[in-house]
Length: 412
Image (cartoon, rainbow, N blue to C red; front, side, top):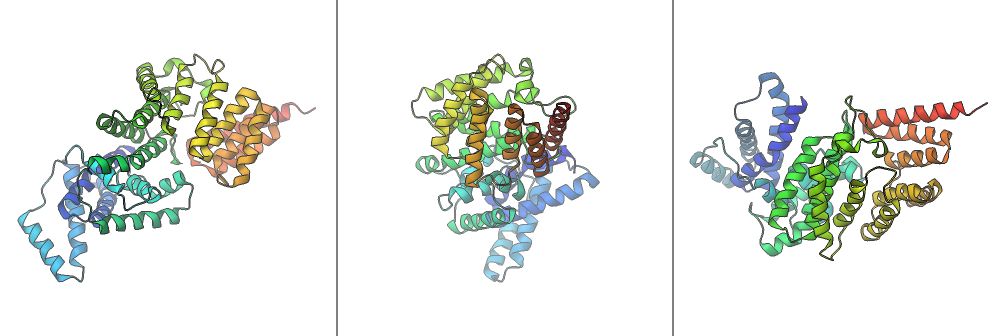
């Protein structure tokens, strides 16, 4: 399947699912049928060509799947009612409502679900991420995540939730889960967990678009503003993150003239506005860190002591091991590699990032800073073996080779 087809199917997923849920009122059946329709499209479109109305094609196939599923049901009454509904309202080529994606997001973040199940379900149904990609984001086995998503679909179906925006009070209660979904969706697009490319701009761009929609409806919420600011300030660096051949360029080597000045200006304004509210949240703190980077004229002139202080505050708020990992880099840059390596030793001891390639990659970088080239080579190689992103693997393998050259060059 081509990248264009894959991106289109991901974009159409919430539109198709929204139509099918509206039609049948059965979220679990609609989600299963939509996934089957997407699989059929991925198989047939590259051979038969793209249909004139991709959404209509997908909706027709998904609706047939739902009908077939219900026809195989043992309950005759349900089959007869469904058949009557189909005969009265034949499936057309619909024009989905523009807000279907947002409705789906809030529906998937239903109060019957915990955040641990609501967020994976939304990433699957709305963002089009695979179970493997979602499992990688949550640092759990793929089988565990598949079970979570299956249980979540059943709970939403059993709740009898209507396909409509929740009340204002209910929406506020679900907003945190919605923001977490958008955050993970952007992260997967900015640095993919698997595949040949470093990033998936279509996914990160869709996360930005959806966050803008949420921000427009909840502009007074500082965390919504903080999340949008974080995305814009991070995405502004994308033009400098890779060379023309797709090779990763680390932050220290990026040409900052390539950074998107308009996105930075918008992101900085949003950050300042969100922080001025006085109610600090995790996304605001991350936006503040990104703002320090984006305001700095060069890597060397970056205020790493300020970044370290912000990471320490964020770590107390979030308790996320990835925050601690980033704090180690900031500590090493501000106070020397030994400070960062000490943090890594403590982080490795708690086991939450056991086997994660980013822990090995950061350790390799700090060992390289300290002059331990042999240790850097070992950890770069281990990180390369553990990542499923081919562009990242190539970069880490190259860094291992460069550290190896320095190691041998110093021997008599």
